[in-house]
Amino acid sequence: MSIDIESIRRRKAELLQPQPLNNLKELEKIVEPKPHYVGPGPWLKAVQAAVKTTDHTRGGRNVHS
Image (cartoon, rainbow, N blue to C red):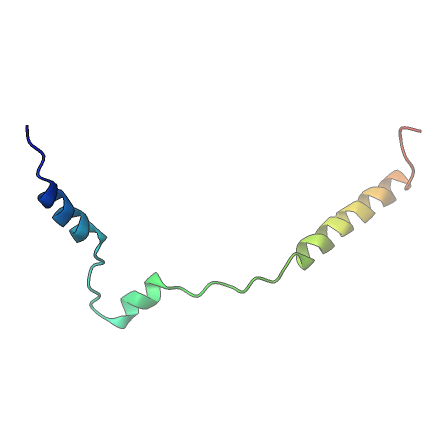
């Protein structure tokens, strides 16, 4: 059984070519705008609020001492 390297290369090139678009709406679906990165601020605020709530409910003292 012989492997035809040239046909494999042609098929690979064929598979790597994108399909032509019918209109620009298809491109808008492919390249959807992503939301901007806002940083860790909202996460840090949520964690700090959770820690404050936990400290408040335990009286703010260490339970192991």
